[in-house]
Amino acid sequence: MDYSRLCRGGGDGHLEALTGDNIDLIAAHLDVTYTVRLAACSRELYDMISKDEGKMHHWDEPCLLMPPPAYWFDEHWDVARASRLHDTVYDLVPLDHPRRSVALPFMHDRKWLGANGDWIAAADHHEWCLVNVYTERHIPLPSLPDSKIHHSIVSYRPAYSFNWRPEIYLLKIVICQVPTKGGRYADYKLIALFDKTIFYLEGGGDWRMLEALTPAPDYPNYCDAIELRGHVFAVDETDGSTYFWDTANENLMLPFVIPPPVVDDQQYAWFLAPSADGKRLMIILTVNKIGIANAEVPPDIPYAANGLQLRQYPPVATYVFELDPLSTARAGDFLWRQVNSLSDHSLFLGLNYPIIANLKKRESKAPDGTLVPFMRKNCVYTAYRNIRYNQYPKILRCNLQPDEGETVGVISLPKDGWDSVRQAAMWFKPALNIARSVLPLKKQ
Image 1 (cartoon, helix red, strand yellow):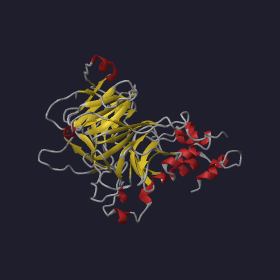
Image 2 (tube, one colour):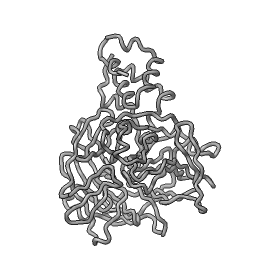
Image 3 (tube, one colour):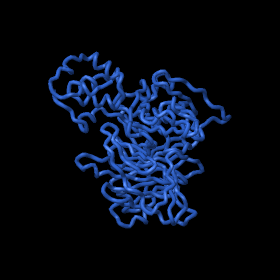
C-alpha cells in the first residue's frame, strides 16, 4: 500500500475524501511505524488515529518487541537466511491486545543490542550504530579502543579480545540518553556492558573504559548498568555489589562500591533502574531460577488476546530497594531502603533501558485470580537480560504485593535452538506522539 499519496501537503483532495472508517481500515493494514508516519501527515489524521486506541493500539503501554514466532528457526544461519522477512519485520505484542507488525528495514543483517525510547542500538559485522525506529536516522558509533574483535552477531555471544586481558563478552548497549535534534544528534550517552568490563561514550567523544581495580581472578561479573545524574552504575551478578563512577572524573579506575541490600545464599537476578523522578537509584532482585519442587513444568495457557503462551509458577521472592547514591557517597553510608509498593507504576526490565510505566488505569490484581489481564500496575516485569545469553529465557510478572497463594505470571517463549537466529525479546513503548516531535506534522 502506498500510504505516501495520503501524505501530500496541500489541498489535492486526498484527505478530504477519507472518513473515519476509511482511516481505520487503512491504519489496520499498516505496521506500527507506518501508522505513526500516517498520523504525521496531517493534524486531522493524527487526531483520528490517536482517538482510535480501542481498535488500533494502546500506544502508552510497553509491548514486547520480538521476531515473529514463524521465524524462530532452529536451522543453521546459512540455511535460515534463505527467508529474509525475519530480518526486517518484527512483532510488537501488547500484553493484553492483538499483536501488530513493525517494519524495521534498517535491521537487515543487523542485530539489536539495546533500546531506549524510539532509538535502537544495533550491530552488523562491521559497526555499531544508533537508529531511530520511525525516521530511520542512522548514527554510526566509534570503534572500541585497542581491541581485536571476534564479532559475529549470530554467535552465542559476541566476543571481544584485548591484547592485555582475557576474552570478554558483550551483554548489551545501554542507551542512557537518546540523541536529540536540539543536540544535533550528538548528545547521546551510551554504556557498552561486558561481563568483565564497561565502556562509556558521550556523543562526539571516544569510548572510555570504566575499571574496578581487582586482581584477575576476582574480576567483577557485571549483569546490568545505567547512568544516573552523571554517574555510571553497574551491578555485579555474583553478590549484588554495585560499582559507580563519576563520568566527569578523568580517573575512571577507582569507583565507589555500594554493598548489596541482601546478603544470603540465594541466587538472584539483579537489575538496576532509576526512580520515577530520576533522582534515586533502584536495585531490583528476583530469584534467578523459578520452578516447582517436583520439577513438573506447568502447562501452557494460550492467550487468545495476542497469541502468547502463559504459565503459572509458584511465587518467587522479588524485592526493590532504592537510595540516593550521591548524597550517601559523601558520607560513605550506603543504606538501601526497601520499596514495598510502586503504586500506579510498573517496571519493565531487560535488554532495553528500564521503563517505568504509569498504569493508573490498570488493576494490580485480576478480579478472578487468573493470569489475565497480564498488564497490571505495581508489578515488576523482567525479560532477557542481554542479547543472546539464554540464562533468563522466561518473561516474568512479579507482583510486589501479592495475595496469599498468588502465582507468578510467565510468558513462555520457545527455547533457542543451537544455531537459532532469534534475537532476545525486549520491551518497547510505541509512541504516537512522536509524530508531533520528530516527524513533520503538516497543517491542512
